Image (cartoon, rainbow, N blue to C red; front, side, top):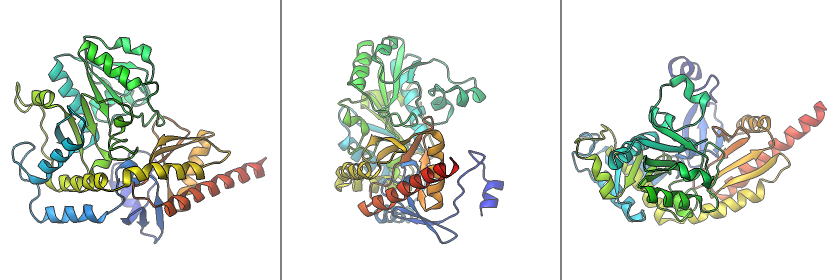
Length: 399
């Protein structure tokens, strides 16, 4: 299968990890060679309830037997999508109320950009350096990283950049600004948190000049930081919020939400100002609804903070500079890029799945399912420490 995978399926890197997956259950992925792999990545934060959670699978099965796709987005009332958006509204802080369902997080960002320009009548979008919002052309335009942007220019115009956590840069937000787009926690940059009430200051500046604040919750959202949404840790409510990844419990979905006043501007002048065929797909919406219900009615969000403490207690080693993050959105910062690469690849050989971050080369992602047990955390952290000890031994042998 791996040979055909390389030959026929378009690749994102020259050297994919290439695990040949047979099945996945809970916190483990099983490969065709009979091995099981403890998953500390959860599909890059997407499988919030683990693999094939029974409530998610049951919701998918039940909906698949009723109807699949029946009409383009927004024309028919379909119970799973209606129930999902209603439940989201009940958990959003006001004035967030109305949700537009998309197929992915990057599509949510595209829609949010359009909505901000449509509502404000302005063109300029301000984003943060070292941000990651996706890879479609609009999302890519928000990424101030020349290596990734250069091959695809020209990109979306009217984009300016500020430095995350630098309040002096907020003067660049003016009456020409339609929106400021920020991750509530910078993911690809190394799980960088807003400091000294930074997001509050951004929101205040936006209100002063009539700009909108768009917060990207694609990674931190859906319980990963101990709150349903990451921004709830920072005493701020965005004008528009973008969602994705963990929202679907392993199924592909995204969304952007705003107040009714803002969101309704997309529905007229022109009509169908934003269109998607498969957004709000009933099977996907059923999966997301089951996921949201489980996260909000269980103790998983509170437990994520306790599990964070266990990770921090166990991940102490001379080759670990620090552990960043909150809840189950964590990153080991290794002593060097070389150590990070060795750790990820050697852990893979020992049955533990870790992964990289986009910009911070010394970072090792730890974003397991919210359902991970303490025993599984201990198992995985034990493998990490053993591998790091082996790396030290090998380095001493070379010396």
